[in-house]
Image (cartoon, rainbow, N blue to C red; front, side, top):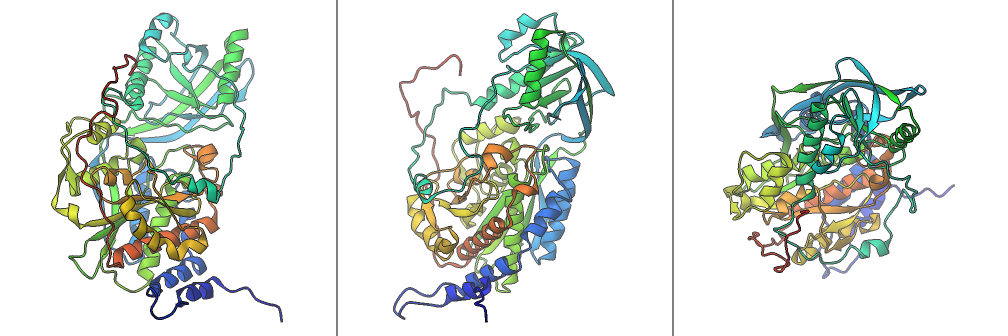
Length: 538
């Protein structure tokens, strides 16, 4: 008789059997073994992922497709038995929907080009055909050089740069050494004299495209920030009255440089451009999706778990952040399948507006947990930046109820551990909750912080918000925001592990007698360098 491998279910149960004497620490919660068994043997995470990414696709905040995806997610969460499933609105700005597009070179030869219209840029009126002009502009001072030269042209505004050669592997799993290198304290820095990069780039883009229109240009093209025929279409001009003034195209580096070379040798290439897109100015509110598993003790507080549901449009938004979203949905299913009520209420949230400045989580935190004195007229990145620098922070009644927030938003790679986000007092308890998952590769707590996603809004007001360490795979190198962000770059084994570890951490935080220690409510910092002189370029 052949030797049969031990099934995941039996292994899960074996992990739950106490192997130490009676006087040792208590045995692990048997619910963990059930979560492992259900999540590994009867996982629905990839089927859920296909329904969202293959069946619905990208989810630009406030687009028709994002609203379709929201209705789908609400129905899915309700079908799993969650309660209080609803949408919570926040001001966002215009909706924008891309219906179709095509850009080709028609002279000196016919060649389809790899492009994506920039989000929230206007459509063309039918198909326009015109020559290109290479007119790089990165400062307002550059406008004067091109005055009187852009009429009737398609304007290429980026420097062509050079082909980049990949010197490192495009696919990576963390080694133990690399994870250990994440275990360092990140000293905070506060520079009141520096203007954040985005607060300079975004107003300049609006002025540049308006200048091109005023000069009679027909469209604007900029170069993708990565080679390999990858484009993303990232755009941020979603406020009424501040959209880009001309059809704006992001073009693959290889195609962009070809046009530049042909322009130099002459005559200038001619392009055919057709973009069908439409704005939605009737619904300016975005929405977050909220669902709960009620706790048995109303006084015990709330544990939250989330990921951002919105995406860009070049791909299907699979790794960023469909992966985190379906992990939230699967974790909710796994916990509800236990049939046991947690002590604390578990609140699951799928955020939108993350790609435009974590606007959904910022609005939720501001509405429920703490206020900061910010000019209400500010929107987008301007509002986010002002919020992060506004003091004092005034807690609201719900503030004390939040015991933890866990976030997944680093692609679809396996969870390898968790960042303590600069709170060493939390490391021991986080490590205790991770211990059952160490054999799955997720056992490390590191001291460093992570940036650029929704847990930061919790951390920013002193609430315990945490992001997990994930294997990078090809997330940053190729997939992030790009045309390759499809289900093919999600791996089922990784996603099953992500969902199980995520659910296990949430469950333990919701049932433990212990609570994660909080950092102090932040107060206004002093400048890290009190002797810095303001740089006129900042």
